[in-house]
Image 1 (cartoon, one colour):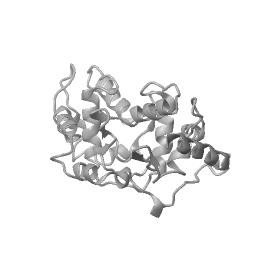
Image 2: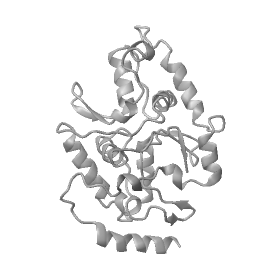
Image 3: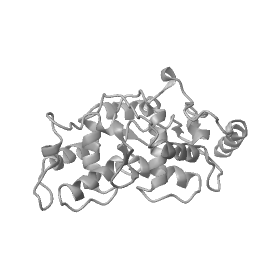
Image 4: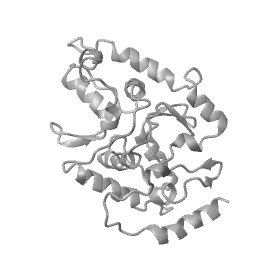
Length: 263
């Protein structure tokens, strides 16, 4: 079965792996977009939709507590700057990745949290993918649940967007696979025991059953790289941020569903 699927990947790659002159061409129209939850087994979907059963809510609750807790030498909490009266975090997750002028680079939400901790709160930044950082990220994403993905591309971040699209269509690893081969052309088909999704980010941070923890989209990128028998990049790598930007933009219009549950 696996061998047959791999052969079909190569056949499709010969047909679809062409340069696209239209930078902003999308593989799916707005009415064709499908969230990852539409590919879940019934029992997994039931768990995701029930906040009492959804294990990702443990990280959300921990993040909510951290968000209101004084951190660093200035004894400041996140909620002092981000509340219902100013700089609300509702919808914030849809603004990332974005360009940070001071850092002169594209950053994702987890990196922004660490910048706030270090620059504004004089607190020690959390390790990427650590429990505390993923808890804060999960809570911020949860506060935007039900909002629509709305990634905007301007001239400043367009070069990163181009890089992200380039990476999405680039074949890598011993398997010679690219993201588009699975997520643009084989979505809805089975790969072993799993159904291939369209590969959207609207459910991240997501609770991954295979790891038993909340994970960032970057960790999921690493897993995909490993499945292609390619060397994964480190979490927070500029190329992963560029890829996240492109993939998130592909899902504009989908509702934010974090914390989702994925395999």
